[in-house]
Length: 181
Image 1 (tube, rainbow, N blue to C red):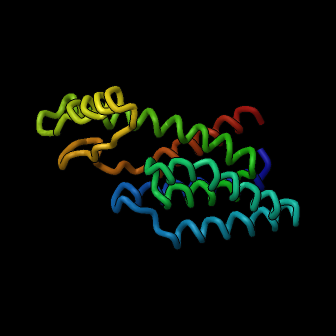
Image 2 (image 1 turned 60 degrees about the vertical axis):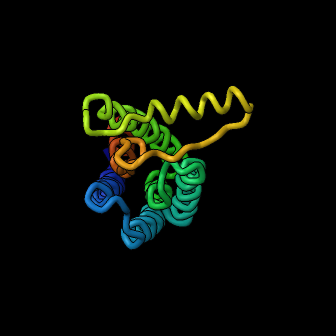
């Protein structure tokens, strides 16, 4: 593997796993960390590949941001998650950002299912089934969707650290690329 790729992959892994630790502990990702990661990504790509590398980094930033913006707008992910994926895109370029983003979303879905499944085994958590039943009944009767926010203590009302999904997805993408190279 080329030394340049090892450098790029090392920095992006440092970024995503640092963000994961922050997200696990604080349930937020610091803007300074994400901004520093994006700046390093653009500068590193520019230093290694010239203006074409810097342009690819900027395109990767836009693709990384675009892949998680719908989730942010619908309330599934936080702004920090979208910004982190954008910073990842500066290291991986547009195609890498797209592919790593998709893998991250898959990991997020698996973690989300496991997170929600804990409610089935934890007797102290509030079941969301009554809330879901009422939303479905309202939709069937009125033809209009109706959202009921999770009750206090309900597992679906807890934030889950999506940076971990981004870290797992990015790491998996890197090892997949490594096996191809």
